[in-house]
Length: 82
Ligand SMILES: [Zn+2]
Image (cartoon, rainbow, N blue to C red; front, side, top):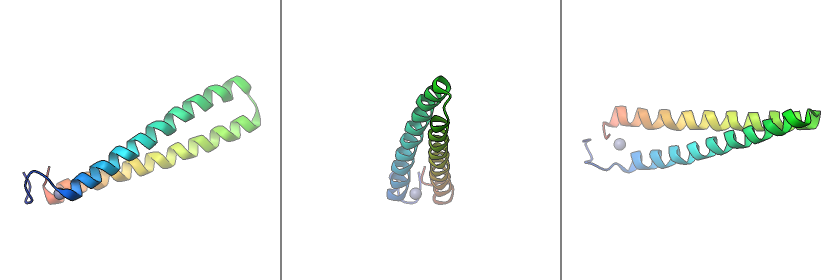
């Protein structure tokens, strides 16, 4: 238990942010998978460009998710509120 007891407002905010970022990342992966199927089926350049765009969105979502994960881990490590 941390210095502020069993609940830590900052930790809860960081957790909520992480949950939201995980959902965005999962959705982006789902969209990427659906678009890769379409791209493979069509083998057209515009579909490939759309797929590349989806890939970039998923990559940004991954970076945001990992950043949120790290912020939560760092907070718990320094605040010792886990
Ligand atoms: Zn805390």
